[in-house]
Amino acid sequence: MSNAEANETPAKNLLAGYISEDEMAQARGVGVRALRAERQRGDGPPWVKLSRSIWYPEAGFRDWLKSIEQRPVRARKAA
Image (cartoon, rainbow, N blue to C red; front, top):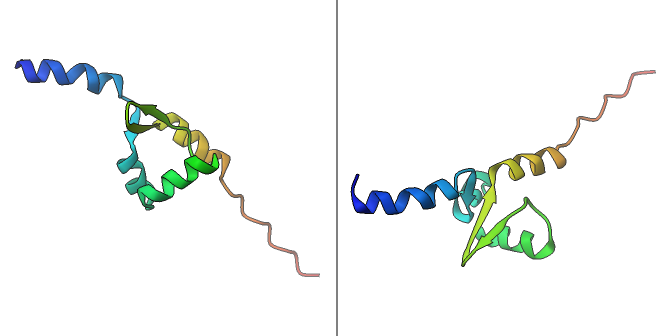
């Protein structure tokens, strides 16, 4: 293992289970500015700020999706 590989591995392991702000924007089909606006309003999935970077926990994102899940409205029965 090279010295560069040894230095990268711990950081990648620490962020396992998290996705970057850019990856979240791409996955949701929105812009980074939309994510930033959500954070300012207190909406959206949970997030973590490390230094100057924003990271979203994958498990938290899944929980957030379930919390905003919509149920179909029952069709009215014909009288």
